[in-house]
Length: 532
Image (tube, rainbow, N blue to C red; front, side, top):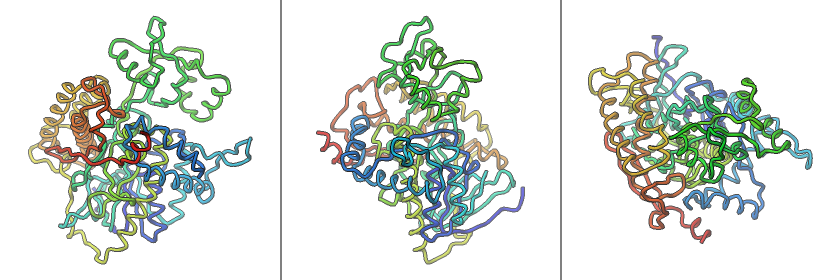
């Protein structure tokens, strides 16, 4: 192994997607020195880079924005906050203009108005432009350099991170005045496109230093994909009719609760789809908006508009769900001094409540929360009057890094065991208390075993081991939070508690490692009051 790399900076950003790059940009523009470390290659890794996405971009018209806010409030169980929704709408409007000018993104021109169409972004071009923009701003980027643990002072404040550079085969330590976790959500290594780097690493690192998470019961998002494919462009299936193998239409599969119907059917038999409700104009727009969705069909000689094809559901966890690290103020600070969170790593309940934000809300949240976290982290770092040395900090990582016993487990064994409790529809999606208790207990036992016996021997193994530990940890917080919500609200629907309970109009917080805890936090009453 090469000689370890030791650096220091004002702000360290962990991640490489939209939230991370916006955080790095705004931290740099706030006068801070910035280093960004990414598990993959910043600009190509993560869920945004390979896909097209809509954006929650609404002109500053009071009526339009009121309608935009109202659109998902009921779906989200009235857990969203008008304060945060207003902020995101305003910040997204600003950022989308900036990326077209300073970021040099080539927005298409609306032929009807002659103005740039800022309603969406093509992920590959968007992230290519963001990487170039932050480089011009002076951000130092370290690719293929996953962070493995946060570094803390004796008072518990976060002062950097340690990790491993895969291509250089060396460890690194980066001391910082503040850290932004923008490492993405957790899709449990389900193979959904772009999510293999999204294994919940940031959530685990945050919990290890004492941060809390919120909304983890809303982490059971599943996307529709052609069987054998990784592309989960579920919005396109709004134009689909779904069929049994014998050609009968599956009643209810195309409704608002259609994915539940599809999941129930998949437990018994194969499901087929055909995008037969898209007219010629819509078909052309779909092909322009998401070319890689059609690549899989074109290669097989399938016309998805006229031919039926088999479909499946892939878990997307907190990448599409809303749970994540809790943020406690407008700067996206966490409960731990010096630690900030943004994008899929942070809870998205603030604007989505308990229901998925799809692509549009998620992309708006990523750029907005990244903006605030980067500026907040810079302000915190620049207030620091004392620089720390390596001898002043301790690594907070444990499970998957520093086992308490002898090596008895391999990372892949742990991942397979965790996935057996996290991926099946009848455990995580079609929820029942008895099944969730069993899954949670199994993951608790797995956590004890991996904490003791998951002992990596080299740098690459440490990356895989930490992913295994993080996936297990996220699953434990998810199920314990879901068990604490004895009702059906937002995405967390329970067969044993099918109704919505007005007395549970609150957020559920969680955390802990060897022992998972849950508690409640009041929800913003403004959303509920305006809806009633």
